[in-house]
Length: 111
Length: 117
Image (cartoon, rainbow over all chains, first blue to last red; front, side, top):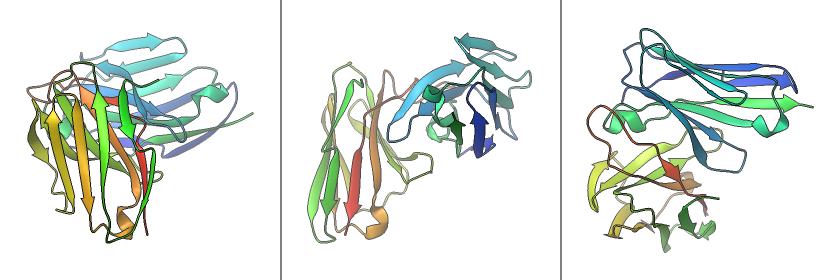
């Protein structure tokens, strides 16, 4: 399927620092979804982006969809220990391609 | 805190055993999914049921056999598994099946941690 590439694979930050993960594709994406999975937990839906250049905010989280719809980012301001986990993106275009997760970014926070 | 319920939470089985994983949702969702997840890896799609019919099978070995008895239930029957099949098996559901240009968001259960000895 059409897989999205995520970077970085791992990110260590001090508590209070900002964090950004990127999701990139060589082809235009229909839409993109972001999920968070806590250690020992299951993926939880965060957001879906549909429009070119779209920006959405959820408290300290900011999600962006690129103008060309080939990349997306998730930015967390002033990380907290509750932000620990793995952040996955998936191209949510219709069909099986949209059900394939990126490899994820593992966020580790040092208090 | 999930509306998708999976049982059992943990399962240990031998390579000659037959076991089943169960998943239930009462949100009226019309699509249900099985994913397999290895440690530190993303979930990998196995099967999709749309309106109780198998719509996607991602070339999964026949030792995994899915079943959808009704719109709320999804089973995964396991037989003659291998140690490399040890993983977290996640069930998910969505309001509508994947189709067209956009997929619905997925609601995941807490998973069954499977160990094959």
